[in-house]
Length: 193
Image (cartoon, rainbow, N blue to C red; front, side):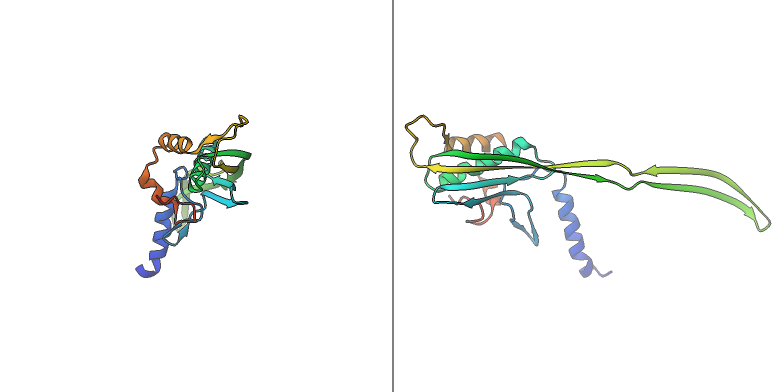
């Protein structure tokens, strides 16, 4: 195999190795990384001028707490993007996609034979068993339907202060301004300040 033919395979393998074993980053779902597209992260759908559905999908290394927090963080960002210092959550949904993988069992037997054309004898037999392990993978997702508000309701309705939520969650996860660049182009979930 020539190196030119092997290059795409090497790039894919390196990409898989780099991305395995880590919780989902705070970034837009579907963000392009070279020729690969992220399968996890946040997305949103606008229903009306001030009502949005915000979703975060995590990989198997992401906790439900992280998925919920990142959904709340993205909700705060959308509110701020639309000039609304407050938002309310109209609906919440959480889901865990669970899959089970069982590796096939295998057995390797080694038998040593010694001898000559007229005589043969067996020395030892060793059998190694592997596989048959069950791996459970859980991928959490969280969804908020939010309404962005320009003013705090006078009736005492619980509201989130978007700037406070934004600061609090970014601090909790050690996210700084440099990480905001990971979130994709405008309209794909980024905040341009």
